[in-house]
Length: 149
View: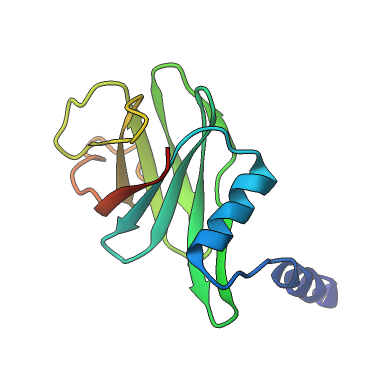
């Protein structure tokens, strides 16, 4: 049974595609996922690069852009979420960091930043905090920029 898990972990690692540049990794993600909407790149206070992706109208998911010895890769770290007025969910990155991402239609708090498509404002909080009352207290967003409009 143990060898099965080890083989599974090794196979998963071998299925990761690495590219010579971040742009090439992003282009592969765009093509493989059929992304029609915008992509915003968040650099966290921990220097983790998170991609907030509008798959298509009202459908979003999150990926992580990673640099390794073999090159760059962009991996999905959440399922798609279809939203009409906002939402939040917990994330665990491939680099083992935990965050909670929040989407709001209106900027009611200075800790929320606009996405490039202007449909939502987002906040990224360290840890899994959906149930905590003071969850928006410390935003982990250091920088946010447009990768694809």
